[in-house]
Image (cartoon, rainbow, N blue to C red; front, side, top):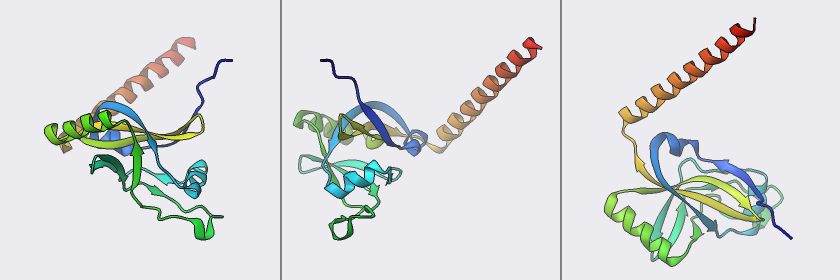
Length: 159
């Protein structure tokens, strides 16, 4: 019996792509409580101001907001609590070295379910300067204009 790849995206951090150059991506598991998973299934999460940090040899996700589960009553947890990320020790030490020496940042880019487990895609990122952001925006607008022209040109040829 062949298992098919089963993944469903919960959230994406578009702000990360605007503020950083993502140099490398990796997958990590999350240590969550029960009502947090139920809230994630409803898609009630915000990744925009979050980042990952290494503390005492463990990888922690800081600043991710998971809204309280509506039917959770007293079993709900703090929406902004730090959550432990699950990776191999060797990978964590490698990331720690890159962050310390090269001045990189660990930012979450995607949150998704994979075979029933919650996974986080972490990006090893280098910050953009304000002029880099303007250049990226100008390039994006130019690409949109070219696509629009090509699309309109295709319509004109059919008439």
